[in-house]
Image (cartoon, rainbow, N blue to C red; front, side, top):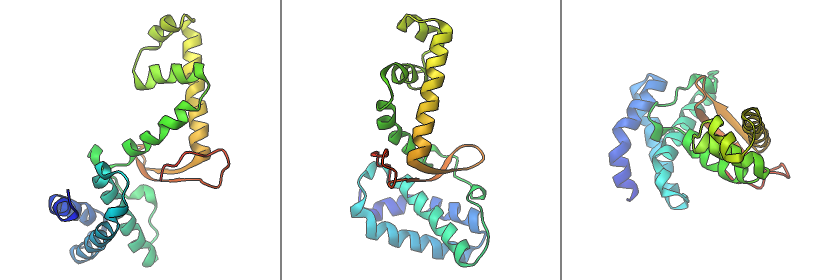
Length: 183
């Protein structure tokens, strides 16, 4: 799909999205136009074209934030509401960055974490499959989650809303342990 086709499909929804944030029809038109210009000029540099819609919404969020910053209006990132449509948020996009992090965990914790949180296997069943006690399975899953959280916090700066949905994330490339690129 080319940028004009994408834009025709998303323009009205994006305008409503921005209007809900800025509460000004003229300002909405200006911001949406700025978003279109960025999308049009940077479309060829996007690596994963399947994620173009979430990327456009992120560009729109950033433009709204930039507008408020320019006008010295203090707006916390948590006050900017993310659309409830799962295609329009970054939570699923960030989750793809977790796979290399999960792969870097020690085998016993990686295995337990994948079974519990990705495959959605109950912990009692995990204990049976791994031939360990139920409390041992719970412990492995918990430790795996803690290790993953620690790695994620070390490698990425994540901004979430009050519901835990990702509003923005950036890789901390300055950290030596962070070989994972989520940008």
